[in-house]
Length: 218
Image (cartoon, rainbow, N blue to C red; front, side, top):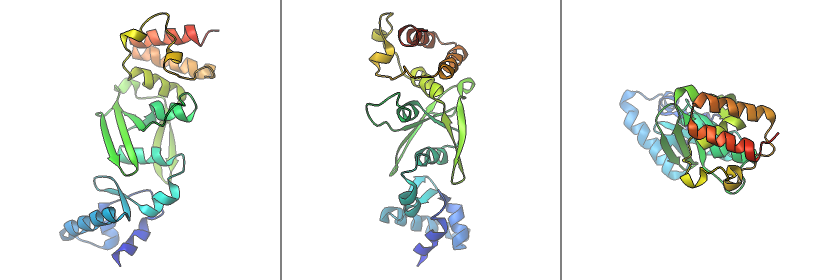
């Protein structure tokens, strides 16, 4: 059965239509037949469609989904020029603890949202000078980027509207937004400050001053 061809892809995180056609030894005239076959297997649950023309076998998903690098790697497969940030990182390190957040990544490309059976993958645009502050990791050959805690915190504030009701001197922003920032290291605080300077944003300078006055006192 042709379904046995999927065994070629069970130990890799994704495959493309072109790669599948090579294994099938299909020519250009077979393109529609191949796409119909893959579409049918998606409906039957044998494979997962990550985005147009890119798939993952159900077997790989079942074996690897609990790995901490699985979702960030999928995010990179969907959009390689991006890094995982915001609530996803802050929750993993305990800065945010209330609820589970979807995976959000930062990109210099356009804002977009991709939904598939694995979840929702949101991509937020940031200007190129601020596209930094992440480390490179790998997962089964997939290269993905993750923000540092300081950069994830910066991105969280930078991309989040700050209502006038919170722009008051007496407010404790960390307490108001239920952020656990007391244990942030000196290195992380200094790194956060460097992004504030780089942004040249009055809003971000206000936030930085508020954090230093309320929870990061010497």
